[in-house]
Length: 124
Image: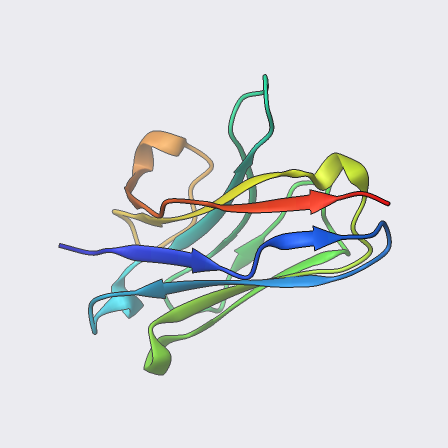
């Protein structure tokens, strides 16, 4: 069974950067599209980026476009989320998830495997 583990979260000041990693436990991660999601207290889980299985297609919501960059290294079974120009409203638990499809989907039910999450806090 595919197991995902996030890392790289922490406390950062506004305007700072963090890079999250999502490591997979299997050697065939390249068949899955991977999404990054976040959930703040009292709010619904929302998608912040997705990358197709090949890495050729990515998408972002307007709230993070131009600040976040998703990438993947299939040889290392790892997907990354580079987050720049962080804002207090980016504070949330960030999760990575693997989709049953090779292409990106905005529907949370399309993602079958989830990591345990990593906390990102943006504050002075």
